[in-house]
Amino acid sequence: MSASATTLRDAAAILGALSAASAAQLHAPALKLGFLPSCLHLCSSFLKSYAASGRLAFARQLFDETPRRDIPLWNTLVSACARSRQPHHALLAVSAMVGEGSRPNNLSVTSLLSACAQLRSLVHGRELHGYAVRNIPVLDLRVLNALVSMYGRCGRFAEASTVFAGMENKSVVSWTCMINACCENGRPAEALGVFNEMRLAVVKIDEVTLLAVISACTKLDCTSELGEWVEVYASENGFLENTRVANSLIHMHGKMGRVKKSCQIFDSMSVRTVVSWTAMIQALAVHGHGVAALVRFSQMLRQGFWPDEVIFLSVINACCHSRLVSEGRQLFKSMVEDYHITPWMEHYGSMVDLLCRSGMLDEAFEFVLAMPVKPDPVIWRVLTGACRDHGNMNLARKVMDHVIDMEPDHEGNYVLASNLYAANENWGRVVDVRVEMGVRKETSRCSTALSYIEVNGEENAEFFSTLASTVVQV
Image 1 (cartoon, rainbow, N blue to C red):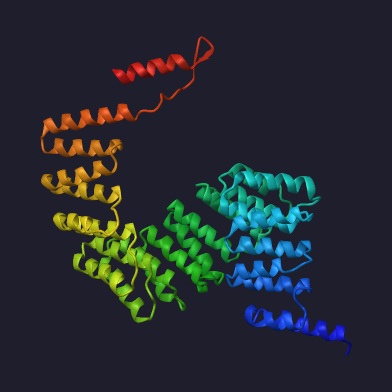
Image 2: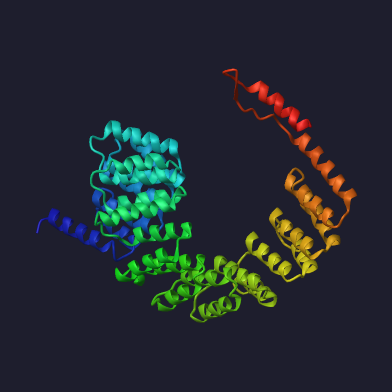
């Protein structure tokens, strides 16, 4: 066997092993055998492997050590950056690619449009669209799908619809991109309409499409019939065995108040993840089934799952809705001391809400003062509202001092303070707060807004500005 044949055989063996072994383990043998960095196909495979395992720095180092770079290798790097959620690096890579005299092709543009979608950069996305139309003779389906996705993510629904309507042969990815574009632009009903057209076109639906449809149903707060239909479709087509689909259905039914249905799907799952438990606990929590949520949480721990910040927030919220004060305290303490999780502001807010709902206002106030981070205005307003509802005006005044100190120019704080004093029939303080609010409002005003209206057939801004100033002064 010739040396060249042996080399090709060894290279093929390494290429085949990349999917089953770590790239780091194979990198050194490939260097010793002289395959790297001369064999571009092998370089490309290593780049993909490093990027897939989250080691983009290694991929970039290998790329930089390759003296002869062709367009496919550049495309591999750009795609790796985009898939690794580093869109800025993808844009920088293509800039370097152009600087070395290589022109982006269909694959390059597809990856770059994905990067623009992640950044929600409409300017760069439109520039790429223009480049593709001018320089690429035929835009393949991947580019068109990426354009629909990019325009959808950037809030340009009309442009996404135009690109989608112009496609001659739509794939399942095309339909899914359009459904997602509808959902991302607040058009869940239209998303379901697109899904219906997809079914009529006899396009085979995959997991990603079904997840987009379930998301549309969830956002739409659809009827029970539609929710049942989606679940039946998932069951008849074998999607209920998919953990991600089952998780989404649990969330959908829970959001619509069909907690029993969420429980049925959860109990039927053969494989559960932390997301599954979180979706189930959230469904129970928001509908006041606090004890059931705690039972599920205990089951999750017994089965060896490690709770994260999200699931702790969900189970503390469950205690809040059911006023389980001691359980909520214990969970918060366990989160910090046993699982070494640093609480988010939302965790603190949920604990304050729990104490306030249970009428323990003084303890809630002490909890807020003892927080290791500065409480945000929302927490103070929750405490203020609880003081108002329970008639604790002495504490309310203390809390309002903190609120106004934090946001002295927020008009809503003065309205809240005024309403508190009015509820206590302290009219002198009501007047004082209203006067203070007026002073703040005058000193914080930067400029007068202008609106154009027609006067005798001509646009006139000054007339309306003068009129508006008169109304404000009155």
